[in-house]
Amino acid sequence: GDMEDIGGAAPTRRVKGSGSAASGKARGGPPEMLSAVQRASLTKQGYKVIGSHSGVKLCRWTKAMLRGRGGCYKHTFYGIESHRCMEATPSLACANKCVFCWRHHTNPVGRSWKWAMDGPTDIVEQAVAMHQKMVKEYAGAPGVTPQRAAEGMAIRHCALSLVGEPIMYPEINALVGELHARRISSFLVTNAQFPDRIQQLRPVTQLYVSVDAATPEALKAVDRPLFADYWERFTSCLTALRDKKQRTVYRLTLVKGMNMDEVAQYAALVDLGRPDFIEIKGVTFCGESPASGLSMDNNVPYHYEVVNFSKALCDARNGEYALACEHAHSCSVLLARPDRFLVDGRWHTWIDYEKFQELQASGKPFTSTDYSAPTPDWAVFGAPEGGFDPAETRWRRIKGIGKGPEDAPHIAATAAAITAVQHGKVPASAMASA
Image 1 (spheres, rainbow, N blue to C red):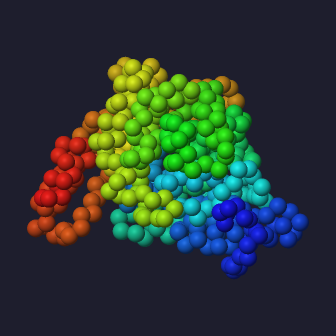
Image 2 (spheres, helix red, strand yellow):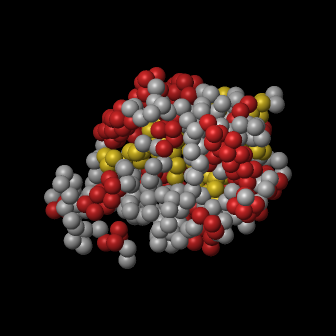
Image 3 (cartoon, rainbow, N blue to C red):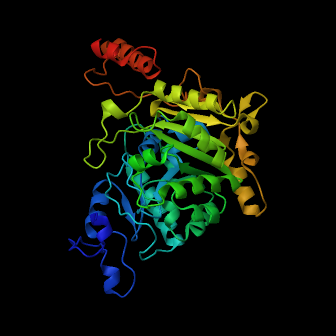
């Protein structure tokens, strides 16, 4: 078996100030989730570990928007302020070992909650404090203005998608309630292996289900789930999404050579959950790892390939979904339902966050369209900005070219060539030879 599954049976190296997986058993209670080695590994990667099973980390897009260099795809698609977003998780453990996992499988795995548990209030309080500390430390970076730094300290959004499976945490409803009590919106991502937890979940601002493949064989190859009945759990999670009245999303991560040839099967899965939105994103390459086997050349699609897949999926659904937004920098496209979010010819994929907080606090039933807001022109699919907010400053890193005035034409030409390749206007080989 994997080392993660052995728990406290193997000897562990002690790290000052941290517990081990066996420490809980020594006290007569359940073990802590993280071994000393796992805690040290996650800390080395930049994660701030909270208690015994939670974590928070400063997202690269939070840093970018603090410096005025643009926001993430959620800013483009849904209007979040990336510099005011906290990325966190109440469960560092997961029930999958996905080939594209950003953490290279340094976090624990499990089929059920079997560890000592920290309270939701403590987790949220510590996550907020740690996030604010990281923002304060980053405030001295070049380009961070006092205004952006002050705004970053006032957290408005929480992406419960950092690592692991947040919905595994037994007190997930209470934790979401703690966020909402602080008027922090909730973007919760689940890997579609716990249908009962989805059914029990109270309203969140937006609920994502990862749809990483369209057939049992492909899902096993891509997600590498621990459950033997993974496909039944997966389809049950999608079906459970149908009963949710708030915003729901299928999130597809495309990996060339693994899950991009099954458009018809993906289209059939839409019938199960009938989500408000479908996010389609090219896999992010996080470096070579024996645990994944992915490579930049063979498995990472260009933006135009993601767009072509998105168009094919819309066609397969006979117009039920349409291309609403794109964030070319992230190779991401958003499909939305025109019957709900295209109002008088204008997309309404953005969120009125204050309205959501009022609705969820009222205790009365409400739906996804009750807190939608107009999408700006620059964020709409096909706009010349490609989903980049014109109020921000575009920053490009181009190796081998300086930043002096004499290099400006070269930078512009190279940037234009990159954009042309991303959109499929010229083949990559042509730019490489040039």
